[in-house]
Amino acid sequence: MAETSFDLIVVGGGPGGYVAAIRAAQLGLKTAVVERENMGGICLNWGCIPTKALLRTSEVFGLIKHADSFGISVKDFSYDAKKVVERSRKVANQLSNGVKMLMRKNKITVFDGDAKLAGSEGGQRKLAVAMKDKSNITLTAKNVILATGARARQLPGLESDGKLVWTYREAMVPPEFPKSLLVIGSGAIGIEFASFYRTMGAEVTVAEVLDRILPVEDEEVSAFAKRAFEKQGMKILTAATVGNLKKANDKVTATITSGGKSQEITVDRVISAVGIVGNVENLGLEGTKVKVEKTHIVIDPWGFTGEPNVYALGDVAGPPAPIASRRSPASASPRPRPRPRACRSRSASSPSLAMARRSRWVSPKASSRRCSTPRPASFWAPT
Image 1 (cartoon, rainbow, N blue to C red):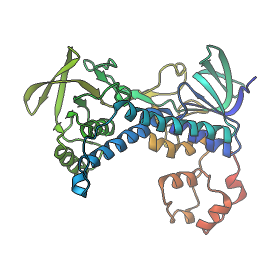
Image 2 (cartoon, rainbow, N blue to C red):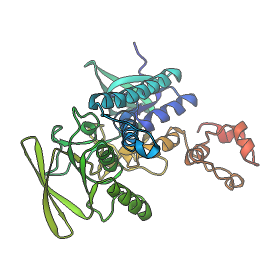
Image 3 (cartoon, rainbow, N blue to C red):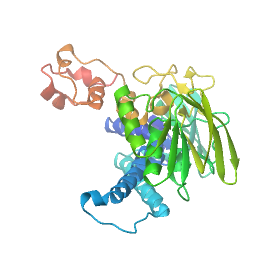
Image 4 (cartoon, rainbow, N blue to C red):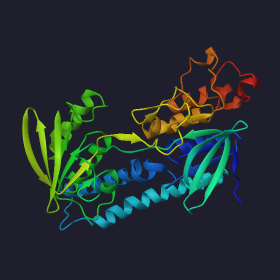
């Protein structure tokens, strides 16, 4: 029978969760991960990684289109949509399997199922886990990290149906590529799919409610990207709102209002990329001190929630996944302590190193090479 008592249990095996689990195991903690779907989470399976695989395919296809400018003659070329998708899924599966290997290498127990907080007893947190094989088990641990990620936001009137209106999941594995497409939202997700499908030959319109695309980027970056995408033939509407979608005859008609003028466009498919909401449901947060604001768990800079020995990181707590993997070591740390002042003048070469040093994860030997003030043994001792 599998072990059920641990020092740390991480709920969610995405970029934040599995990195935290690995670091905790390296620090000597008996660690487990509960994952309901695929190791690697959305990022490796349905987000960053497979999207980049698709974009690489479109990049190659785009180069072939302009082969003549390189002095190369290419005739009668085309793409196979099924093989394009298969390559993307193969890349995602390979990396997901790599994460599974890392779990085995670091002796981390993985449970396939859904976990929720179930109170505490004797200083141990209890988790009720509904396994994929329909069985139910109870796990205990001194500490719990919630890293359950997020999902696509659904707006009234723009809800996805998986057929004509897509989220990123359906857009990742289409049975065939649409000839015309409306992308609602111009954040990273929306723009990546708009770029991919435009390069593969679709007529693409992007509708953004704010006054510029890629609104979280610098204004100069947004302006440069807008010019580049329009040069590709993409139609971009800013300060635009999309009314209810009308579906008929395998088409979707949308009313778009921009600049005080309304227009109707009919497309094969619509991608709704209007943000994310945290997966905070069914986690057993009721009756705890964990606070949820705007669908995300409230944490302090070190990932602490209001509930003793319960932490959170990643998309469920707000930041994007790449930041989650940098923050995860902080959540796995027993208790953060500031570095001696003499060491702070030498900044880390990356945010992750800075986080690791603040979390006391740079070994005493490695630290002495970077810092003129050696740490006392007590600085490294768990609290």
